[in-house]
Image (cartoon, rainbow, N blue to C red; front, side, top):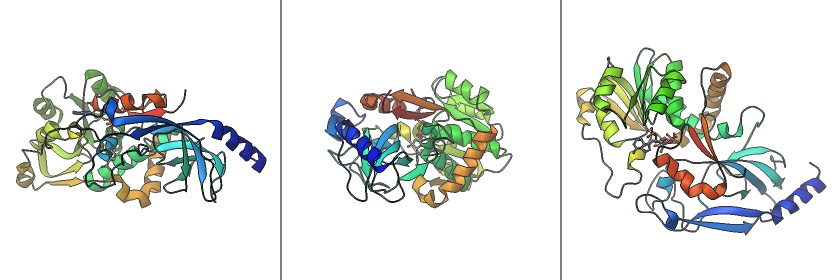
Length: 348
Ligand code: NAP
């Protein structure tokens, strides 16, 4: 794009409206209509050292719920009045920042808004011809990095071992199970509903699936894991973690990736009553935070892209259209309405 074209595009974009979702009030329990404020502002002009990005896809993550709490965590809470934090993929509309040019596709943390002005922090270019854009928020983004490093570095699965994953039909879980299969493990997924469980076995090649909504988790898990559980990758916490703890093997590794069953609690988080199983089995339970691996992301991206290309790893994205739907779309995660990686397409 020439400078004149870039200036003309930016002028048109500046007349455009930036649709934004801001935090209005910290929720107690589930976020609701009082949590959010929808604002429309004029797209600002960029200064030297800035880029203007038109967001195309917004990542919808369970972690968003935690970012609303005014509590110490691995990242600062979103402040009242701020645009809601979110991972994004978009296109650079205008740039006065070295290394970025109009037309580039970029990944970043540009929030729940249709346009963003960035000084480049956390922003990186992606190849839009290599993979569909939502992949860069899912399998080739935070979900993929979480599953890859959480399973391989912390779960340390060995061929022949049994790996169990909860939230198995979701963004992280569906990748964890498939990576464990690639590494030669027996893989059992725990998910809500027959359709998701069938998908895990029939489409993703899991060895078995346990439907926690329509069965007895302990009994069904025992049948699905006749030799016990060596690695448990937990996305859910609560009762499911407790049930799996009763079936772990000696030296088992339990990866605490998340506890979505507890995120909207209005009472204290329920810890595992069966934790002494760790003692009996000389087992280990360890939490992970994806950002700790940022320097190694390119290694994971290369492996995951290779597995996608070879057909060993299947990617399922769940795309909802319209930034206006953000509050309802976020709740899909907590209602189990998403199938695979949930992303919000900003415009139709
Ligand atoms: P996801 O699995 O795509 O979506 C959430 C899923 O959780 C839902 O589809 C639902 O599936 C399940 N769920 C919701 N409420 C539940 C409940 N009460 N009991 C059992 N299952 C429930 O989300 P994701 O993005 O892949 O994230 C998965 C987990 O990883 C989350 O806990 C998230 O916080 C965590 N995470 C951690 C890191 C890290 O660095 N530690 C990074 C990214 C994500 P069903 O239909 O099967 O119930």
